Amino acid sequence: MSETVRFGISLSQQLLDQFDQHIKKKNYTNRSEAIRDLIREELVRSEWEADDTDCVGTISIVYNHHTGELVKKLLDLQHDYGKLIISTTHIHMDHDNCLEVIVVSGKGRELKQLRNKLKSIRGVTHVRLSSSTRGNKLS
Image 1 (cartoon, rainbow, N blue to C red):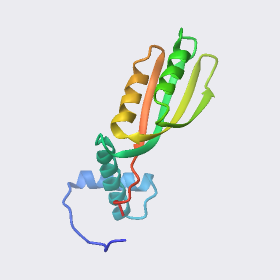
Image 2: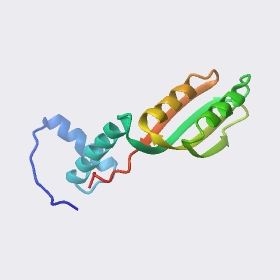
Image 3: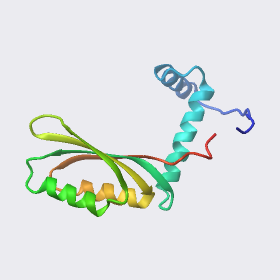
């Protein structure tokens, strides 16, 4: 682990008060921990958005399984991207709707491409890609 460096920042009192409320809600013990997490989160987001970065993550999909040919289209697309998919979990939310969580690993551009293709299928009501890098540089 690298050495700790202290630095100062300037904020408006209103922004600091809001940040302190955030810290309390998230159960941080101090501002430094919260700021470190925010910085890491932004650095990871920026890193995985780079198209050639190796990423791992999940793609969550909500869809109405009664929509014609939807399940077949989802399965066909997942087979087309089989090299990225590690695992899938299927949950019946109610009589009509399903949640599918797809665990993925690959280049950022490939994961975003899969997410976008899933979004474009008629009957899919929600898609979210949550991704991260290995974070080796984020001590």
